[in-house]
View 1: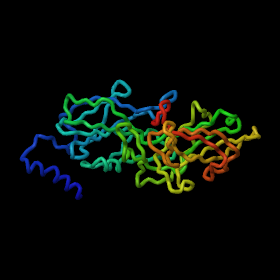
View 2: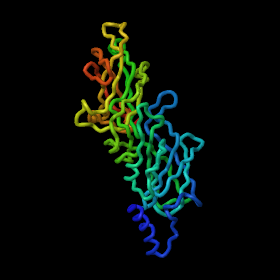
View 3: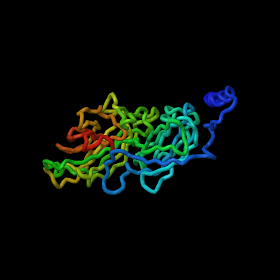
View 4: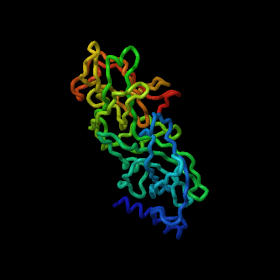
Length: 342
């Protein structure tokens, strides 16, 4: 209640002091006169395989409009153009600076209030992460327009940042690893159940994050459904998506990790029993050699995990898995050939 009273005073006082104003009330819905503006979207450095990839899909796009110092003022839906990356939006004309937050593949805006700051929006826009994974990946982009909106306003291209990371798992084809170990499944363990759609801090010049944005209300309680990885190779690895995660103090008991299921044949090529192994996630830049803390997961990163050796069977039950019998190479995409982002 107090917040709404302050907002009311903030709107009314300028009118009382200045007598009148020709500025549109920023708190009215987008009706009457409006200007249609076209733009294009870019989901940077996409790594795709044959066919449509989940990390590419933009099913719907909402635009949150912030006018000058008033905060959040209204929301408008973007219309898709004839080309796949072309869109247009209708905005209210005015002479004040405007910031647009582009929110893709997210539909729950009930917690937003007129006058909210960008920080308020960050905290309010949460997206659930279910055990079966996402049907669409939430994405975020931002653009500022100086001098207001008119019929000559142009935007250009806007980069979208995915709100989750991707993890790809494969088995090395070298030294007979694939002959003695048959990968069957992958799943996430101790996965966060909430995604913060907009990162708390992002470098908008490079569209990279250096720290995870994990909602305060999120709990690392999700064990994801098994993903079939039987046909995974280095050329076509098994992929899954995970929310961001912080590096915990106790990696063994608290870190988000992967559980892989596979058949260890070793000297018994007829064995068919599936056992389970744990893989802890860390990101090693191929460009700088810098290693992210174990258990930390950053949005829009692609973590590549290659199983380079297996020395024995794993555990009978997934929740008991450890990494003692499995050797992996884990890296993110940090060189020119393999970009850091998805």
